[in-house]
Structure formats: C-alpha cells, structure tokens
Length: 407
Image (cartoon, rainbow, N blue to C red; front, side, top):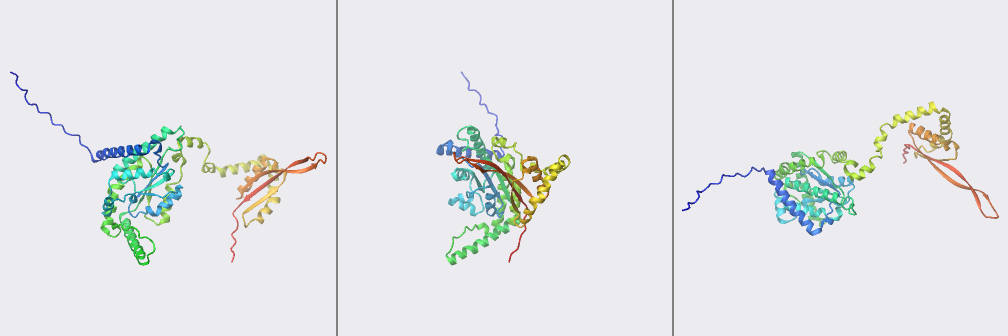
C-alpha cells in the first residue's frame, strides 16, 4: 500500500524591496512603450519627425515663463508659438485637478505632448512650456530622446538625413522663492479680475483665464509647494542628460533677460550635427583671432619701420597728403570712399601697410581693386576698338562719426 507523501511546506519567498523610484521608472517604460507603438502604428516611422531643437521651459508659478517665452524664441530664432502643456490638457477631469492645484496624470500628458511635437510647424524647433513635471515624465522624455537619436543614426547617411537630424535639448528653469511666487500669483489674479470686469462693462475683448490659485494665498502656496515637491526634483534630474540652464528670475524683466542671454548663447560644438561641426571647426572663431590681434599689429608696424623704412614712409606720406584731407571732410558721416590710381598700391605690401596704419589710428580701412577698360585706339577699317586696362583702387575708411544735434 502506497502511503501519501507528507505535505511539504514551500519556503516563504519574499518579494525584493522596490523603491518608489523603481516603480516610477517601470511605469514610465510601460507608458512610453504604449505611446510610441501607437505613434508608429498611426504615422509610420518615416513620419516620426520631432523638433530638431527642443527647449523645455519650466519654473515656479509666477516665475515669468509667459513673460520670457517671446524673448527666448527671438534668442533662439524660433517662430512657432510655444507648446503650453496646461493649455493642451483641457479635459473636464484635467480642469478639475488643475483648479485644485494638482497635476494631471502622466499617461495622458505623455500621449498628448508627444503627438503635439509631431506637428510639422515644430520641425526646426519648439518651446515646451510645463514639461516634464514628474519623474515618470522625465523618464519618458529620456526614452523619447533615445528614440530620436536612434532615428538620426539610422538615417544619417540616407536620403532622409535632413528629416532626422540630431536633436538639441535645452532645459531652461526660471526660479523664484516662495514669497515672490505667491505675490506674483496674487498680483496676476487681481490684474486679470480687473481686466475681465472691464471686458464685461465694455463688451470689448475676451476674458482671460482666472485660476483659483491666483485668488487665494493658501491655494497659491500649495501650487508652489507642488512645484517644489514634484516638479523641481524632476527638472533638476535633467541636468545629467541635457543642456541645463538655471535662471534667477526674481529681478526686473530686463535683468532676467540678461541672465537668459548669458546662459543660452549659441555654441556650435553643442548644437551642430557632429559631422557639420567637424567640417567647420578648422575655421578659427573671430574671438580666437582677436586674442593676439593688438600684439601682432604692433609687431607688424615695428617690422615695417625697421625692415622696410622707405616704403613705409611712402605709404605714410600718401595717407597724410592724399587721404587724410578727404577723410577729415567726412568727419560727420564717419565714412570716406576714395578712388585713386596711384601705383604705390600696386605693391601688396604697401596695401597691407596702409590698412595696418589706419587700424593703429582707430580707423577701419578696406581696399578694393577695380579694373576698367578704357578705349585707346579705334581702327576705322576693321571697326575694332583697342582698350587699355586702368586699375582704380577704391579705399573705404570707416570711423565713429560726429553726432550733430539739430533744432
């Protein structure tokens, strides 16, 4: 008789401890995969053309994103209107969450934003205002940029290379302290209230959106705290991956603009396609050739005086006797255009001396050679005209002109 085997108790297995960040990253991968596969199915890979340049504009409530957007657009040469994520999320449920100072779910945000970025008007570049705001959105963004780089590498040497360029990502953070943020939110609320009352009274214009957080101190404070607790951490994590610009936005508008200008000046090595940059990098920057320009000018002038004094004196005499009387007559305009047929300038070294002498004296001189055919003989029988070539040197001399006040 066969006895049943004794019951065996399986050892207790504990699930590995998973941090919230691990769960968020997994959620991001699931969300991104679903969104990306949906875009592939709807548009096809060859139409997944995202912006070449993407500026992620974030900041505390009241930091001035709306105020500074136009300045950033002009600075970066962008013409399309910014993508304001809060305006894209207009579902009733989203509106209710926003009215309470909360944030709309990541899945909905990712789907709407990525689809919007495919609009043809954003191909060269776009400003994305209010994204990303959470860790999940950050991870989805990184996954998107990875895909964009994959497409660039795949099509880099094909006929589609111009459609799939290497993306340039800038993160621009406008930051203000809590008190400044609350004060600006409430000021904005009062201004919008006054404006909307005027629209009601006159019937002219359209009312502006008035957020509940713009009317209540505690709601404004909660909105700032949401930014600090959720968005701030997400945004600062981007500095490890993209060009990161932290802007102090607490001062006057002009001061903030200067802060932005210093942070976002053009850098070809960071923005051009690597192949393009490699082709251009051998041409020196203007700033590089200016570094020792003064010392080199002094060295050349001393060399003229020591090694070739006769020719140097001839050029100086020509300048003093022939050119300066004309230059002086143009003191108000700051521009003298002089034509001369002097054979002195047939010598290239003399031309170099002339330009250097004017440079040392604070002028900007340029010399062009124009060859003019002048009729010399005419053969009555054949009708042929024989010409000689006359060389005319056109000297342009620029300098700061004199301001004349009239009236």
